[in-house]
Length: 314
Image (cartoon, rainbow, N blue to C red):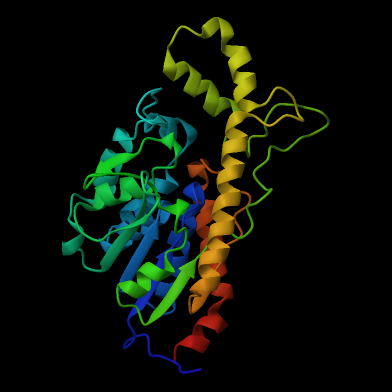
């Protein structure tokens, strides 16, 4: 194998999709920094676009400080629920959040080369966003179908990049990377999202990102006069009993399966030079308040692969 000097090679990092599991990207980037490896090319899909944009704009410290402060109450304050608009969550508050944490910069002016992956809702084609406002690129890349409303950008309705390219190795190479480090958040998630069931208790465990506390707040936010039917509706959303999955459990598990299968196919056809796969099955799709756990897992994963990384670099 031809080794490359980190100082001479154009190093790219492909940060994959995975919603709340994406905080692990921060830990990976911190560990690489300790090894003296600083990617100059960053490609992100979904949550990977958010962390990648913060890294490329030199705002990773700001993002990490904020995500470590999250709790369920804060998370709910960022979600603007709506029945119309193509998603359960409208996403305007998320757009404002992206501007606040990353800055209102254009992609072309960032200190590092950056691009985000989204999906054209009409054609189903992968879209590479390589210019324009950073926060708009991030917002488009993170628009999980059914959960977050799509965003209209450049005459296209765009949704989550994880639908077409969950770990954008190909985009990294297109941006000029000689060596690509890929961070795959979907390696151990299939079958792990389902609610824990203890002794026939049909109440979702607190470790489930789709727990009753979250969806109780969703129902309250709707304020549509459904209070007399709230318990019935809640049972339909979360599952009528311990053996029956609810709507959102089905949706989350389906997204997990889809992203896992697409990731396997894409990375088999275009393998990265280094593949990092943090073990994140303990982090639910919307458990953004588990940042410390995810960051630590990302850091440990990168450190455990130090030998492989050193095999690639001098």
